[in-house]
Length: 285
Image 1 (cartoon, rainbow, N blue to C red):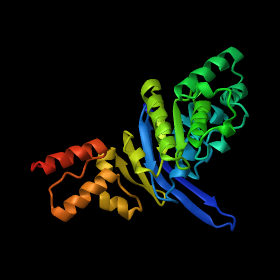
Image 2: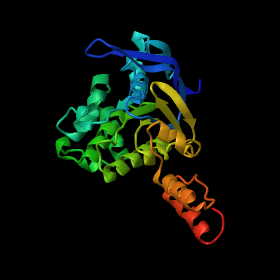
Image 3: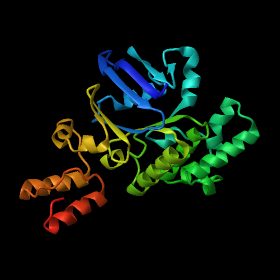
Image 4: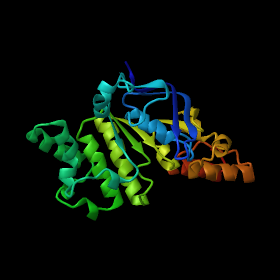
């Protein structure tokens, strides 16, 4: 078994307050291997957050199935094992922080799991070190910045030693510094711990840092591949209500205005600078 998350013909319907039925996911087939860093994109209403909730069994399929670490989310007796294997971090960390002291908040889930006190202390300290928040362990969470709160929320799920962490737009409420801090933590967890990361985001500069990008629209999987393969499809992405990285936008604009012959596949600032340097020197990028 090589799949951490396996959605097979996943369909989900929900009913709003007026009792009108809506189809949020429609026959989605999407697998995420162990140890992968995957980003899921889509405009509002695309189904990306609904998919995230299925990874943690917060939502259950109306049709099809979802396997998490080989466990079927439709099996009620497996729910807690599924949630131990795949933890979730939400957009607003205030909705996830429950204690008045940072280290107590990180320990909360472990206490509910019945972990021995000595092991709780070890895991809490390790988790806080991993997210660079150990020095704040005795602080009140409400006095922390948004980025620091989000790192505490990540530490809380990390302490439970999941194989996978699903993050539903964790940087949407943060400033650029906070966003950068959270992304640094995610890359560290992925690289050093081998944790599978599923990042739901609308920030293209975050998605380009993933190993793989999946794009949902109106409940369907539209695109799936490496960031380089996905983000060169600028017209397709624009038609889906999405932007592209600024580096791609710049090269595309220059190429369109001057027929410069630039390669429109630079995802990072460094790659964009290299393309422009070659072009300005009279060569082809």
